[in-house]
Length: 524
Image (tube, rainbow, N blue to C red; front, side, top):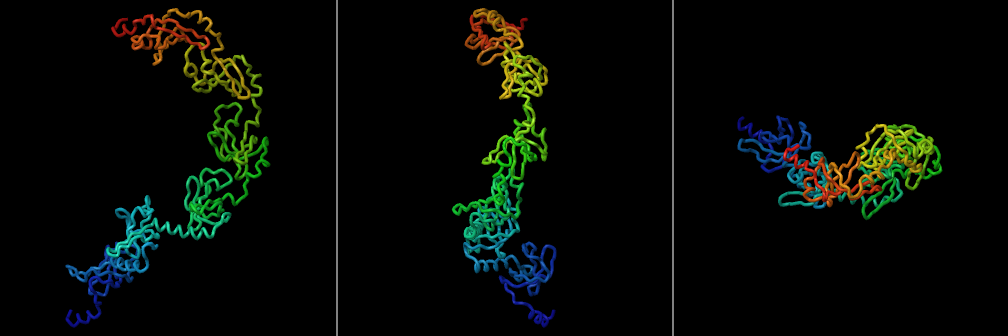
């Protein structure tokens, strides 16, 4: 190009200096860079990463900062990010001061916090002031209001706080709301959050709590059964505490309480129908009408079945008839029974199973202290562990009985009111203790076999199903140390208690047989 042409071309070029902010126009995209014409002799290239929030459109005019018109390679070096920073700084200084609220966008996560973009200016948001703990990735790119809490003009640094902005917004919203609302008002709000105990409703800047107990006159297990986040809902203002800033809300209070007339509608003794709405291990809940439920406890399901499983007898949405047993409007409870619709077999149990009768029954279950035996029409009696044997030491009924086994029992007593029958097995035989008192006289020495050694003594088998106890105080220390089960021993009777069915023994002044010694030496 001739000198004349250069002069003509230079007339159209802007006079651009290093460190200036100038207007540029996007004229193209090359790979990961944006080509920008600033009216200079060459175009500049800006990384796409500098266009964090802006659309990249051909022909769009942008502000750019001129780093240098000519670097070592003769290239124009420009930056959109630096231009935004300088322009943003001036805007922030002109429009805001410390304590002001400004809108910004979360640009990136850095050590100790976040970078927030306000007017293109990078502002630092410390973690402690972010309120973003646990949702760091979710807030990236999102816009929030922040409070400017520190401006360092020398270093051109700005620190912001989301926590303080929220606090200020809440204070302003509360101030306005406190002037507007009154107890008893009905207002529309939006479900903001749901917890196990209720839902927080945004009333327009201030949250009120709608407790689970104020959601419905009927029983609900979780607030999510009634509401979900984002729902618009009308609620009644139940109470306002300006000191604590708490507002209690009610939803059920917008309708009449169905429990006001339950005593009239469901008198005790009346037969009602309800729908099974909940099945629990302890009973089933019947909905008698919306908001009114009654409980059929497992004890009111059968006259004869001891362990009732409600899920075996009822299904959800079953239509069930029941008798009203009790009504408590204050506690909002209605007790129902279904067994009352059938004849009670316990009314005539003493005719079918008289005291003293010997019956055949089936073992149905166990506790640590006895066995349940079905004797008639699904009715069970209890054989206490102490009534299993006159002489044998039994610690658990399963030592001598099996579930499903058919056995003979004797009826000892009947309590119709408590619906209990006491049964016995040992009572099928005469009490042997009068004879045992004669057989095992105090002072007599007899042979026996050790069956168990405990820290308090040793149990010695005297004959089938009969054991005596040697307390540790009744044996020498060297004997106690080597005593073990199956040892043959000689013992002296020191006490016979027929009432307690116990025989006390002593090994003092009698000899331990030498089975143990023989086993150690290999003798037979």
